[in-house]
Length: 102
Length: 260
Image 1 (spheres, rainbow over the protein chains, first blue to last red):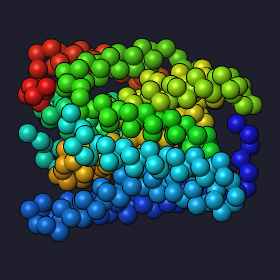
Image 2 (image 1 turned 180 degrees about the vertical axis):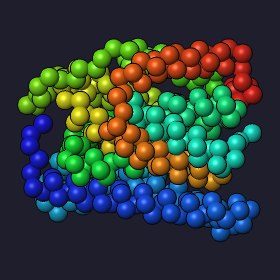
Image 3 (image 1 turned 60 degrees about the vertical axis):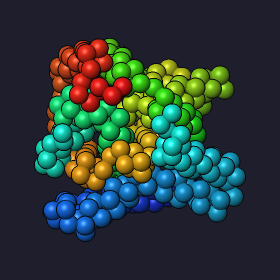
Image 4 (image 1 turned 90 degrees about the vertical axis):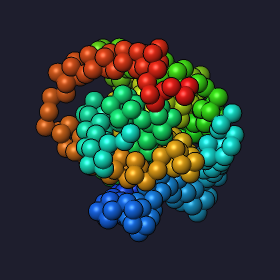
């Protein structure tokens, strides 16, 4: 692959900050939630929020790439990012709907 | 029957740390552990495997990206294939009997053991840019890897290693970092589905995610300190043993697989 451009390196740093920061926040939410007994609604809510955030983070990274490529006028990159996001959304819909229990 | 939060946390942390040390995603250890040790229903174990794989990827991607090891552009291109495959896997998931899932899992464990027993060379010299034919072959393998990931809750190193080494001719450091970043996106649709459909509740997901994050960070630290060659030789045996146990569970039925 060709050497990364300055824009690519900046995007990598932004993606790294998003993933690391998001993971830390999710760990705090889950850790805090687990300390409260599960029966208490607030603990379970916090755990749900944290696990939901972790699962959402990869898509947020792709969204960040989509926005960055769109801003830089990189149509191919933006189209690929959009395609990935659509495939994830379709996967979520298929996987969580009745279609699964065939 | 599910072990307590602390037990699940420790289980997820050790599976993820081991996965990180051996260059594999956590799913290949955590799905058999949850099925065989915790007697969890296979589909829930696969869901928890996917959630764990996403958590490991999120925790380890930051440092890899900061170090400039992961190639985001390449990751995005390959992710169009892996997420397409994951979508296919999710369409099939409910139609495949649990016993078949267990047999498939045993097969993946066997191939992983074989791959671990031989040294991985990667590409000696980084190819300038893969030819169209090699890239297409790589994309087909990536599609299959995505499909296998969402079906079995694993990272699908079995298919990604040949895709990265033989088809795309990438050096090992770049290819492992890039596939580490990619697997989060690949597994996210399956993980989200498992959470949304209630196959993985907060009492399972919470400790598994927290343990996976801790394990991924620990594994990355240990990787710098330990000589993994001997560890890999030992784990060929563990993978073979797990393959036999999963095959056994498919044949005789575990409490978790009885519904299949």
